[in-house]
Length: 206
Image (cartoon, rainbow, N blue to C red; front, side, top):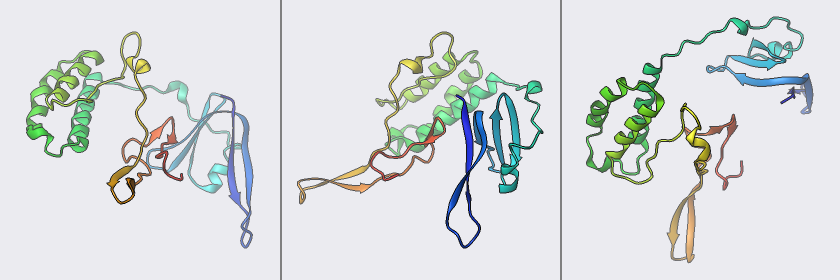
């Protein structure tokens, strides 16, 4: 999309007004912040600009002629190592977020060790998904799925259902002849961004 980029700038004290400073009137493709929050990245008209996240540097984006040489950028990917990390992450998420803290009395550390040799033999994503399904199956629980990923052909995530949004913790209230809202989570600590947009509970005021 042909987007514009503007920032909000405060007027000098004692004024409390805010002005809209336009940096690019179009051509903006991506705006992001580095993982450590120290740099701002802007992809505009096919050129990538990276500046420190300070007011002076951000304001100079439009006039700064230096760009990152992304035409010579290469990424080295080791699928075997990625598969091991994805397996460990899925095992950890089940350990930390499964509804039963005792994990149905399963020795979860042993489950990790049992299937890890199979992960090391995986040659493609479909094989990894199969191993993770077997690992999750050890819990003998419904609603433990493995979907998505880089598959040959159609991505099965395109035919699946969307993840439910955050709701609320309710408690049955005989006095009110209904339910009482106990807690409304603002955002999930691990899964709170979709398409770079924060996902709040539909019951929150955000």
